[in-house]
Image (tube, rainbow, N blue to C red; front, side, top):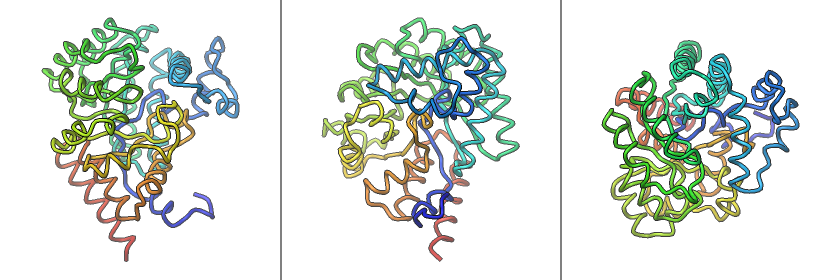
Length: 344
């Protein structure tokens, strides 16, 4: 926190928070990415943390996926997985994130040669260590990388339902949306849901509202990742608001991937005005030059929020989370207590 930080920035920094839309590999800090790149010198990813800023400058969503996958390729053994997971948790704690659901893509690592059980054991070991040492609670959303097709869906569903680690709470779908229709993944979501996992796919980030409808009707979505195009369909907005289906909104990400032209044009204002349960998230924070605190500051500006409004955003994330009822009550009480102390 700099000496010139505003009172609102100071409030955000101390606010207990939950994050629901943040990617495992996409959360790797420049320091960790550079360290992994140095360990794997055949990669084209820069080993200089300063050079990573330029490397993480995206022309469009397709280019973002290309760069993202080059970083995924740095995760080659269980030690890499454990290191990444533990360090991501450490970075989250610095932002007063108390609970996070990380979107994890086991298929990307397993197909690169990491045994599925070793992968699961590595993230679980890091999760338990982070909770014991830092007090942060981590949970997993195992997601299908849509660009890899139905073979990846089959493998992700198998790992999720057969291994089902203690931290796993949901099943997702990421990657590009254009040319990757949601309905084809229905059988895999059906299997995951039958195993007790929640449904939380990405939808409507770079495609229209029909993709969101497909995620709701075909995949049984309980939360929507991004949902940027929802505002193009008033009936969809009404449906989301009526059924209290949350949107995981990631403002800076949407600009970085060109899903939205400018922050001032971001549809989050229309979402909130329609009564939709909105949560604020960072997606792939180091890649987009952001973090959750920054995203809360962006939301404060776009939505004209004061401290009370920001605390409500934090409560929204807790409500929308797949945390158990005692955990939700505890974190909500923390938020309320922090706000009350700030206002004295």
